[in-house]
Length: 255
Image (cartoon, rainbow, N blue to C red; front, side, top):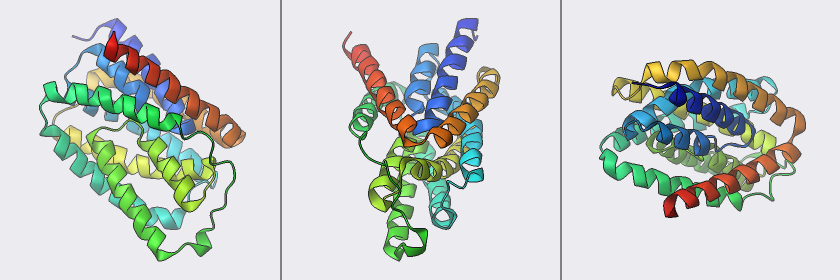
């Protein structure tokens, strides 16, 4: 039985997660704890989170693509492998006992939050040239996309942040271009993960349906602001969210 408080927690938490995810990635660091507060079983938590997050991922990816912030040629290789990785990630997580999975999720959230905190002083300028990218970089980017797809299917929070950092460090993209490409890959892994959880019967549709429209609207606002304001807007959000969530998870672990 779903209570009004459950819906309020998810609408607020998942909408904020959608906004943050569109700006700087890491929205799952907010939505997963929101779902944890509802007390639903862990596998249904992960599946329903994908159900409410993938429409927002579609809006975000489409907004960045429309504004020319997606590297189309590179994404032709990265997106399919991210989808394959997500499928295998979901299949793996389904095999893990739920009582074991919940503490693993809490530890991973904390670890991802700490990681993103120390990734704040990069990505100010775009030095990426798609016409001069070597074949080896296509291979490495595709492999990394597969790994992140698997991670997104298995767990999820921080996937966008990891992808953004990868594109900044490895291809010298700025925050906006890296975010646009991260959104394309994240969309692929989200859709495949959602479909796989749905086939496995691990989604609570009646809990997630009222949340989706709020998430899509919040994500659209976040993506528009990120593109308009640029790295000066993205980076503070990126850092502050990491810090706040890390503090909260640390408090929850030791209280």
